[in-house]
Picture (cartoon, rainbow, N blue to C red):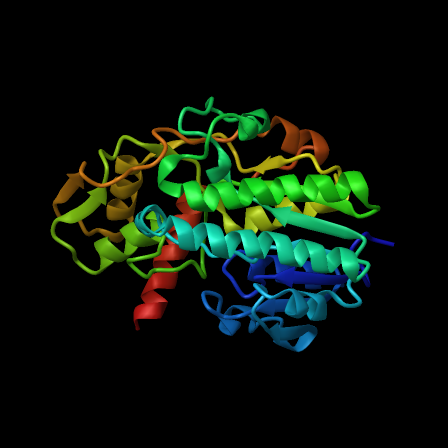
Length: 324
């Protein structure tokens, strides 16, 4: 029998732009899926393709009793619940980011253990890596130094979530999985200016006719962008094949500079307004790219299949749909 068939699976944060794709893939594999989400950032609309096939619970998972309710009867938990925002909000709300995310790391894990869940996937982040991390970045860099300063509250909460998951694996019978995503993007992403990530922020500015288009930092900072569908597939595979409490990067190593990303968006939309690079604003890591050696090894060769060009076209179409 295929691994996921008839498995009782809980996806916390499952109405989010990554979680909802994961839910769809799990349904395709005939899993019995429950989604727990407070809809603070996620949207039930993201689940419309599978709403008849899932059990949905609107619930705040920053409460242990609520987490126990969600975890009851489950065999596998994917913990995607998180407070996720953009770089400026992260930088100026470190307390809020740490407090919310540490609760969302502790309580789902504790509840899963107490309710007898066999396998638990703690979804971490590339934000745990230090500012001067080796590039491409291997998993070993995740215990060195401090998380990058603009995301320190969020990064420390996620680092502590990894440590706690590791201790559960050492001291209980629970099977633990840890994954670290790198810069996810895709349809169902968030376009709010105060909390969005760089790709939706730039698409919104270009398509709304901003002139100039203001870009934070020099534009020379580089990133690897992983489509949400590829990320969902990656964490499914790692969870199935590598329950070892040993963190695995999910991404690839094809970098693009932010200035080149913006130029691509302008070319795709045909809107070429002036650009202003605001170097008074934070730009985060100067470079961020993934060492995927371990990912390929534990998944028998999984790599991201959706190109950035294909993904950007999809997001531009998505934003047009939202506008009209």
